[in-house]
Amino acid sequence: MPRLKRLRIFDQLKQPAKILTMEYNHAHQAVEAKLDVAGRVINLFQYFQQLPYQATGDDQELIALA
Image (cartoon, rainbow, N blue to C red):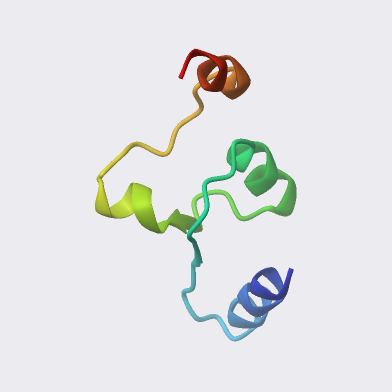
């Protein structure tokens, strides 16, 4: 949560800011919506690989197929 607190400080100062993550979170969209940071979180690996940051439905099903 320290990243979220820092983001809120930038919001209070009216400065643009984003959260950078290094690990993929299968529930990223639900978490971002719940914390009100949708569109403000960038996953390092998805960014550099130019992968879409989108819902895939049931991620557990995709993991089982891998």
